[in-house]
Length: 128
Image 1 (cartoon, rainbow, N blue to C red):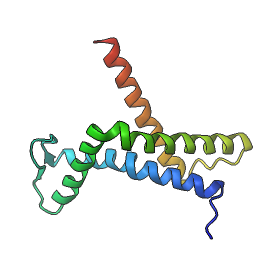
Image 2 (cartoon, rainbow, N blue to C red):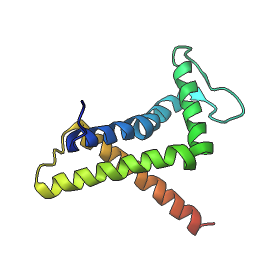
Image 3 (tube, rainbow, N blue to C red):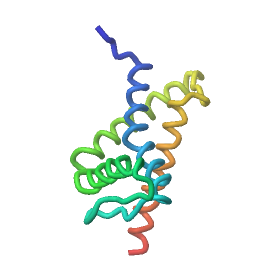
């Protein structure tokens, strides 16, 4: 039987962050130069037909985030982020935090994205 110890739980949380937060953000930035428009009224068209299915999957994920985010997407990502941050804090306190590991890089990118979203929300409330 597979035991879910601290290292595996941290890896699972970082994998969820990577798949649901970091990878879509990086793919959106990379595909924005070639594909468009990114709205819900029509399918995404790209200049290369090879990347068009990837762009359509990304558009479906963006629509899921936009319209079902509070019920499905946000709790999963928030739980994974809190869990990953908790394990990173424990490793930092113990002096065993590996800053050059891929899980730390994924968590760091996710932290930057969470900070940007938080700043955008605060600025939209201030300048409303």
